[in-house]
Amino acid sequence: MRAVTAGDLAAIVRTRMEDPGHIAHLAAARPRPAGMTGRLLIVAADHPARGSLRAGDDPLAMGDRATLLDRLVRALARPGVDGVLGTADVLEDLLLLGALDGKVVFGSMNRGGLAGTVFEIDDRFTGYTAPALAGHGFQGGKMLLRIDPDDPLTAPTLHSCARAVDQLAESELVALVEPFISRRGPDGKVRNDLSVESVVRSATVAAGLGSTSAYTWLKLPVVDDMEAVVAATTLPVLLLGGEVGVDAAEHGAQLASWSKALAAPAVRGLVVGRSLLFPPGGDVEAAVDSTVGLL
Image (tube, rainbow, N blue to C red; front, side, top):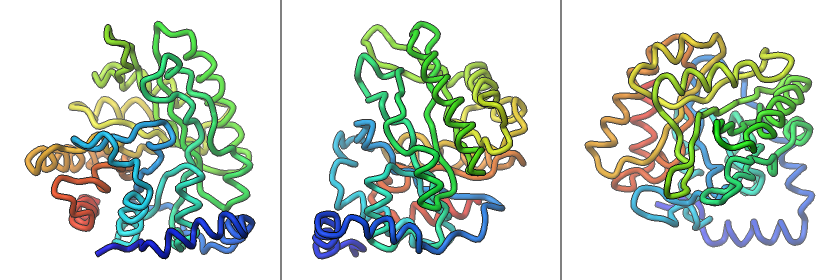
């Protein structure tokens, strides 16, 4: 059963055209979450703004906004789902649908490193700013930090992320940093190095950004030796959900790896996107409920 109808979509377009200021009004009036304690489950939906639309075998899975919004609203309505991570266009659609009341909201800040481009590592801050996040009453900002030892464009991204950490801290907002050691392969594609050594190294670099780490959290991938990864920092860690399993067996293995990683006290939850929104078999509610059970 769909949660978002054609009428809902028409109303969104009509409001955007006739009363765009209503979006800011809704953000200001939105009931805030009681806090961010315990284990968090955050649904990620900032992929489209970087041109990353694939989920499973479908290269355009996240390219249909009606489908994406419907799945997001259904996921956010399930018990145990704490909030969402997205760019302004997605979060404003969710505001207009009334789906963000009482939810933890992270705004995505740097989406300029478009997937598959020659400038992919130059991850410019083309999304939310810290003042905009504070003005909307959101709880934090997320930034992607890919460190390519062979690409000089890594340096300005590092600098921009450090500035964003400071700006978020000034407003007492969480800076959720997602670091990777990345390299461009012979085919020209950027790939993240998920070896334990590289994940530990990226975590230590990200933790040291800015003039304070008081409000910094890390978003880290699940690897075989998560004990070594978590031991690298005293910052709160949210686990990155990763790619969609192509079948039920692979999805089950993914859940098992999350469950094992969640045993570490410093791991405070999960940030999962495509694995919840486009699970094998398409049952969003079942995928969400099984993930909530891990927490």
